[in-house]
Amino acid sequence: MKLPSHQVSAFIEVAKTKSFSKAAESLSVTQSALSQRISNLEMDLETTLFIREPSGPVLTTAGEVLLRYCQTAQSLEEEVLDQLKSTSQKFAGVFRIAGFSSVMRSVIIPSLAPFLRENPQVICEFKSFEVSELLDVLRSSKADMIILDYLPHKKGIVQHVLGFEEYVVIESSKYKSPPDLYLDHGPQDNATESFFSFQSAAPNSFRRSFMGDVYGIINGVEEGLGRAVMSKHLLKNNKKIKMLKGYKKYQREISLNYYEQPFYSSLHKEITKQICKNSKNYF
Image (tube, rainbow, N blue to C red; front, side, top):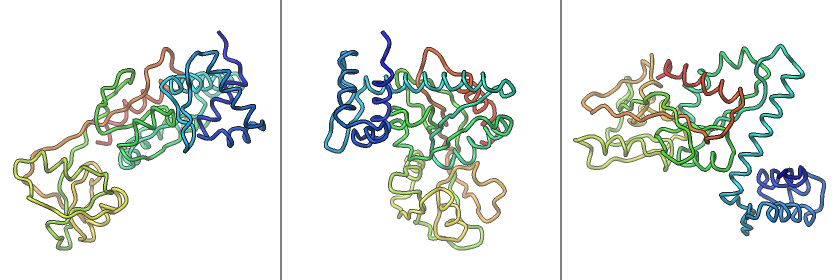
């Protein structure tokens, strides 16, 4: 069975825009014509691809599988065309990686930088999300792979352990910090709570202050605004901060994750190889 290209284009555009009207406008067709294309595709596949919610169309599980297939096929097609156009470049194309900001900036980007410099035809899109959002980002095909601070152990997801992020308690080496005030990324940041729940002698209570991101936390600690539980690898050569002793070693696994597929593009395989090989140098 071959999927009609006009139906596939309609499906991809609705999945991308999460709107039938925006997708119709993008494809220069009427909304009724676009809806008919989606309905015909669902009839051909004998499955529902979208749930029509008041807030907009939401992909079903079958829709998510089809979207991953379409994006993989599109990626492979682009790779072949790029290779035919230019034999001087081994790798070309667009690749999307999502993760949480601290590891993206301190580990993933520098791990890929040498490869990207050598292959300027590769466009790598780095996207930052809250850890709690990342599985949904992968599920909805907003990224080709994601970086997590745990192993999800989900069926159909390939996992690679990149290293271990060790957490320590820090305070300013120059200013006196409130001992009960801990700086966090935001309300969803559970690093401080998880760290102390692992300790045998945790504080009975502590206050929280939110700094926007991990680099804001580090700046806040440097200025004596509070203490923080922070990834040790982010603190190298920082003389404005001191690490407090007396705590049990607490680590989290950093993992690279993507959906299992029958075939991967050469770009996907090379990016996976580069991250797995180089990331250990940054923890």
